[in-house]
Image (cartoon, rainbow, N blue to C red; front, top):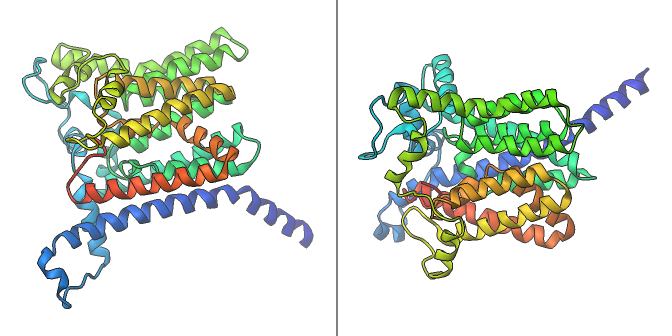
Length: 393
């Protein structure tokens, strides 16, 4: 009896072994992020001339960590989501004379508002929910990778690459990255396992979170075509577009334009272009490594890696995942700029699956890729903490 109990405990420990790696990858990446968000403002507050003074010292406490997060938690897009959570959408006839919050989808603000109603405040509600969702997304990514690879090492690698993606700090802030990453990964995992109801529901919520949620539909249809092709399952997959459709109906009701989320983008300088325009534009002036809001050299490099990941996923037979990644890359490229490309690509699980496949083929290449991602994340976090946002608008 004692031997049976010990064997059961050992098996349970082995079954949860995957969770340890997810926890470590998540914790290390978040500690790096928190450290930078805490220290950079404290260091920059000391005048440069005083750094040779022996009396200069920096002491870090729990309050400093909280203040560091608070400085960035409501910056940039988060301010729009906070406004949405508090006030809702601006109701007026559509025009592009000034920016409006119609570009931002409703699912994340709704969750933020619900969590705030429970806790009675906004900061911790947004940050803790975002981090919990990102952790859940890493767990789902591990299981998706484990289904696709013959051993667990590749799944561990995929999680590590995702945790240290250069713009993954957005997944710890009250924005849409963490929520959409969870829903996209869940939908792709459900499609791989032929759980069509789960595909539909997660896709519906994804479509109410970001516009690229609709890309989960063609990805699911491709997987359906490769399965038993039961007609009844098409209705379940059809739910994927319902979230976006409902948002469009709401925009039509309050602005008269169901495509207001797209058309208002011109106020941020985004217009429809051929997807290769931005890539060729960078190649014509590669010396412009960083411009306003845009780390062009990083965005260009990550876009090329994402395109290569599409090819890898397709060759591996992960057709639905490859299609979702391809559409996730093409859509923002079609706005004619590389701005925020690294941020947009970061929600595509297929990128990390391809990275894991490359790491399996060459361990040194995987290590070099990880070092590059960590370095880029460190740089972007440092600049973001200093008030310079080149990682994403």
